[in-house]
Length: 452
Image 1 (cartoon, helix red, strand yellow):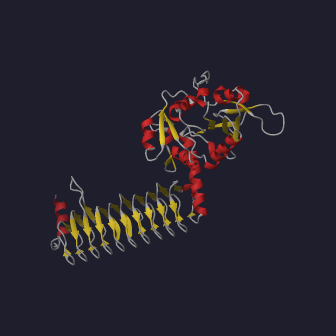
Image 2 (cartoon, rainbow, N blue to C red):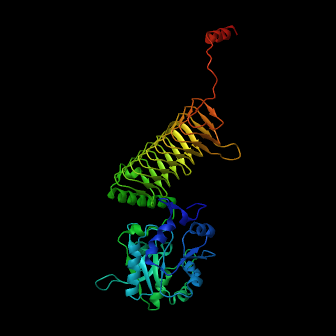
Image 3 (cartoon, rainbow, N blue to C red):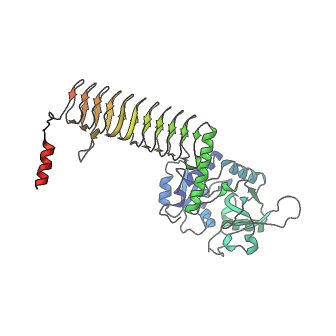
C-alpha cells in the first residue's frame, strides 16, 4: 500500500476494511474472536477498541500465514470446535458464504475446508491443484501452490485459493508445527496444510463462491479504489430500490452507514459520509458534502454546502455555499443562505441568515432575522464566548456582536452596529454617529491631485 497506515485500516465507503470482515463473521455467533496483529499492532488495536469480545495476539516476526495462525495457539489452547480463518483485507466477503463453509465443513467431518473461486485472471493468487478426474463430479483437492512457486502448467489453473478456511481445532497446531519454509518467500505458508493433511489421510474439502468478487483481497491503492467503487455502487443500488432518486450513481458517494429516506433526490457530485441520516422528500444539490449530519424531512440543500456533525430539522433550506459544523443545530423551517458559516450555533425555528455571515458559539431564538455580513466575534484570543439572540430580534446588515453579549427578545440592531453591551428586549441598538455629507469634496480632491 506504500502507506504509514496499516492496510486493514484503509477505508472503504467510510469504514476500515477489517470492519467489513468482522461484521460478516458476527452473525455466526463465534465463541471467541482472535485478531492476529503484527506491523503497527497498536494502531489496529486502537481502531478496534470499540468492539467487545476481541482477543489480540502479536505475530513477531511476520513469517507467513502459517506462522500467523500458530501465533494464536495460546489464545485457542482451551477451545474446542472449528476455527474459521479470515483475512482482514477481504472486505466483500458475505455472511452466507461463511455459513455455507461452516455447514459443509461440519457435515463432511473435514479436517480443513478451503473457500475457492474460478477467476479470469488468477495472477498473484495461490492455485488449487486437484487430483485427476476419474468420474463424475469435482476431483478432490491435492494441494495449494502459491503463484511464485507454481510451475508454468500450474499457473494456467484458474481456480484460486481465497485464504479463507475452516479447520478442525483438534490437532491443528501440531500440524502447523510440521510446515516448512522451503519456498520463494522463505515463509511458513498456511496452504501447505492442505497437502500435509492429504498425506496423513485427513479429509480436505472445498467450497466455491459463485461471485469471485466476494474474495477479492486488497494489496494496492488501485485495488482499494476498485473495491470501494463496488461497495458504493451496491449502496446506491440499495437506496434506489428503496425509493431514493440518484441522478448519477457514478458520481454519488454514499458511505456504508448512511441512511436516506424515500423520495429524496440526490444530484450528481454529492458525498454522504459517516453516519449521516437524511429524511424523506429531501433534495441535495450537486457538490454538497455531508459528514455525520442529521437531516429531517423535506430539506433542500443547495449546491456546494459542507455540513459536518450538524443537525437540521424538517422544512429547512440551506445554501448554496453554506458551511455548518461542530454541533450546529438548525430549527424547523429555518433558512441558511449563501456563504453563511455556523459553528456550535443553534438557529431557532423560522429564523434566517441568508448572506455572507459567520455565527459561532451562538444561541439564536425563533423568527430572528440575521442581516448580511453579520459576525459574532466569539474569540478573544484566549477563550470562546457565547452570543445569545432572543426570539423575534432583528439584526441589521454589517453587525458585529462582541461576545459574550445578549440581544433581547424583539430587539433591533441597526445596520453597521458594533454591539459591545447587552441590548434590552424591544430596544434599538445603534453605534454609528450621524452621517455627514461634505459637498464638493470629490472635485476638490481631483484638483489637488492635478496640481501635485
